[in-house]
Length: 445
Image (cartoon, rainbow, N blue to C red; front, side, top):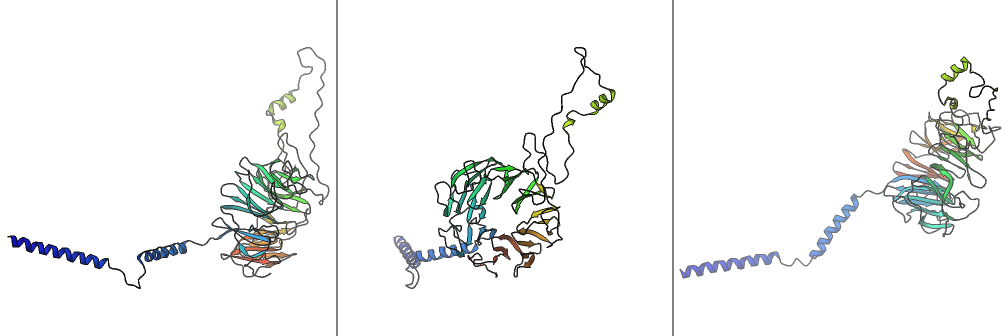
């Protein structure tokens, strides 16, 4: 019996020894030419990271903006790419040297970008604003070379950028401006570099130009000589354009009315208020009784007349200035141009419009309207037309020339002497290149 226990013990010891040897084989050192275990794991992690980076799509262009000699693209990742003229630091890279290679300003979360000649401002996703270029405000030099937050301007719904100044429509629909504005926020004639200032006399602004503005409820203003806004006697304005010193509004009726000029002849003066009615004279009669009895005819007229009907007036014809609300000034007079059924103003070409039939028409700015110059127009930007076919034609004087190599064009933008568009997913630019405004995207002059 004792010998049986010894044999069993021997077998158990042998099994333990064999198990230990097998474990040592599994834990044996790797070959000399094999990488260390930690390095191998790091290599696997790196390979996984490379695969993740390759899956992430490259950002695409969602919008192009151009002005003067500069162009910027707003990307799908809410960053910017800018190129071209940079005399005032409008490319936002801290320099004043033109760049044909697109640069990325140090700004992110951009939801809107507006450019003017030498000036740029961006609306960010937290409803704040940053500006750079030729727009000094309180405490800053006239030229700001990198995107800089505009302190105190928050809750912004919409931004408007002009050369040397900018404005923002804020949460309560008031307007705040900074740059070359005066103490009332009005457009100053000289540089003042003031801090953001609430604008007196403007609200609910939907469009702003250097010579006028309009509101989302259809009112229109032009600037007086001192930069103060003056209300114009029009209503239903949906777009602004300027030509030959005139400020013109496209109305909801499809007509166009202009203020600030007399080139079409004498302007219609503002309608004066009606003179007060003379006091009625009565004959002396008995106390407590009327001096004369009203006739039956008068009684019938009085009874048939509804209460308050003396305030009812015949609606004005389409395109004519509407009467302002009670207590509001009538405003500056305006001229009615000869266009009808207008969808878009194209005043960079002259007194031209795009009609609801997608035709480009021009006229003398008064009553004469010429035959269509271009058909199937989707939109006009500067002197270029994006057509429904996806091609682009630009005007040199009165002649339209198709831009070669552009198909499926979108996001059309135009500067002073150049233009850019997205064509088949790529940015393409043409025109003047004196300040590298065509960038790396040139398709010819």
